[in-house]
Length: 235
Image (cartoon, rainbow, N blue to C red; front, side, top):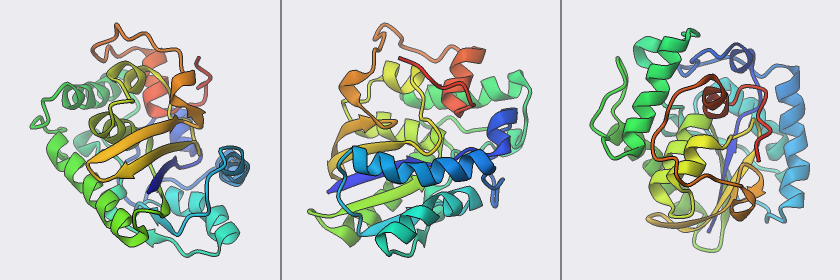
């Protein structure tokens, strides 16, 4: 199957850098609505087939992002809390660098294999990965081996799941390259055996990656990439 993980369009929480992960979450701002519409052109440019299924998280920004896809392909989205963002727990809606660094560093620990670590007041890495694996598995069952589906989700969960499930998404790529608002990340295969073809609307091989990066070192530039704040144009 082809599995497309689409990040939601921009919200005001993205601009402020807030850890907005709980339901229902912030709606798309005008730029986010524009990005969601523009993603239809990206879909065509990537020569993706028509999807048979659109899945969203429970957060309103993913519902709004999915709407142009629903209209274009004549589908009605299916909603799943398993596609929700990595939960910030007690850090919810924080904007200070200390809190944001704690959020990012916890995800970094998960990516390094310490998946039993728990986000303060939230889920462990193992629990987070298990729920997103569930929504991927259910989606795959519904469209079959020859089908195509899109899950409209969130930047951190896309980054974490992609690294943990596909060999092409290296730690350095996942840790340092953006998952832009309304971008498309594309996989081929089946649950447990996916290969990544596209990362954030560009072929995986087109990204210039410093593979010497082996840990998340929180900095403003890195946080911008991880959280998807506006300046995302990276090589």
